[in-house]
Image 1: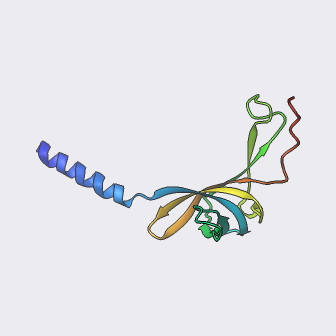
Image 2 (image 1 turned 180 degrees about the vertical axis):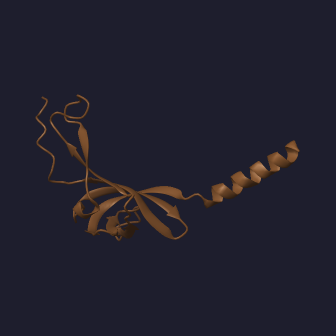
Image 3 (image 1 turned 135 degrees about the horizontal axis):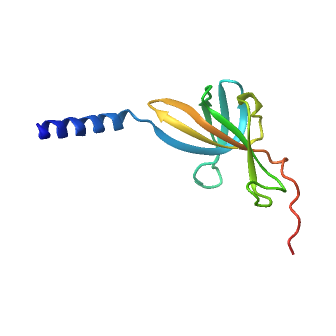
Length: 130
């Protein structure tokens, strides 16, 4: 009986692992965004002067967490000039945002689990420490 239970457990673990998705991160610049998807240009591996960014389209769902990270004087948890995150709606993403998109790749489906955006014009000036 214990051998049968062990065999069943191993088969179950092996098959359930195969059904699980794979988490990946992609970093790039938003080219287009709407309620259902975000399109980014990501610079991949350098292959010489002709290297071009790769365009990716990721599906956004109601479960996709979207946040904006901004550096603030007060900082987070008492750390001066640390990054704070604030939640955004999916429709608040805009072209030019730098994003890190975490996706769950399951088969051919690329669904965004989270999108963390940084806006290039949103950081206050950091004082010179010298």
